[in-house]
Image 1 (cartoon, one colour):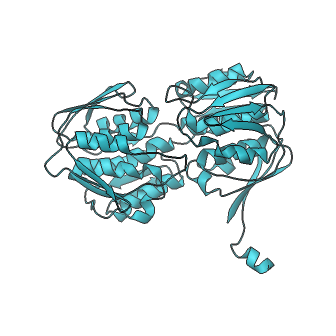
Image 2 (cartoon, helix red, strand yellow):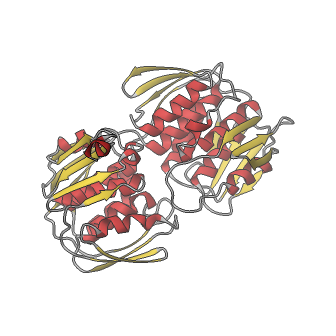
Image 3 (cartoon, helix red, strand yellow):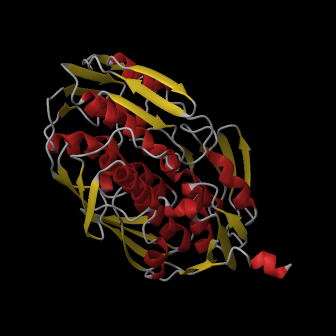
Length: 428
């Protein structure tokens, strides 16, 4: 069992680089199935979700060779569509992109239902609606999604009843080789939707409108290989900016796209944090005196739901009472009980949290209940007085590359320890 131990209260000073975007990487890695060729993917983050994605492909006959730490050659020429291993697929939510990719290339797919973080009900009905509109028969039974379009996929107009990043990308994957034109209306705008579309276009697809409400996909017969670099991870960047604001000091976060973080930086400035923006970096300067703020998470370009827990920590350190409203996932506030162990005063009513600023948090033993909750526990531990121990850190390892080393390099007293599984048996 691994734990993270933090001795808090130290300002962060220096530079911290951002890795490739997890949410884009998992979609693009699985999209390589469509190319029937070799792709070289650069700026891949070294995180478990990417490792699992590559292992899924390898188990299906895809040849994978790492060129360096962040660059992999993926050859999907001889992929076998019926070998996606259930035990790997269920470990991550984004594994559902296998359905769109396999359907697009082979006109059929059988994939186990995905796993990932638990934020309550996360239906795949919009994915299924899109696949069926393209001409596929879809069934969900015995823990699997089965899609069959052996008669062919035909372009059509698809209106998403709700804005869904996963469904937008998945339908795009399925439609890229369909006959005719597919139009996705009420599409998600998120940067990783755009990044996936850009990758597919680099491989010969004809996709326009990504990043807007309407995406148009003109089907092509074949896709070729390409060399493509993943965009920087806006959520990792946001996590470090919030950590800098929470701990004080002067922290320069590099290798990011400032435009992706506009909703966050606007709120940080509202809270009294000083920001210096460059072309590919943002410096956060904080004296620890934070103003209250009201925040509502929304689909991009609104405030990201994946920064809700980290921002919840910052609001605990502010003066006054703040309102944090979750506009995306119904069960995002599970982390609140862990923060209360550290002295937070938060009342949750449905999708709204009333956060009473306490000025300071105290170190305690907490759990990383999901990926972003785990990141929030790290931010809280860095800002708190005393020692914080975080358990269930495998969630954090799903989405943050070298987070311990990166934070150590800017002055954090943070380390990971391994405790033997049988230590408690020996104690008894």
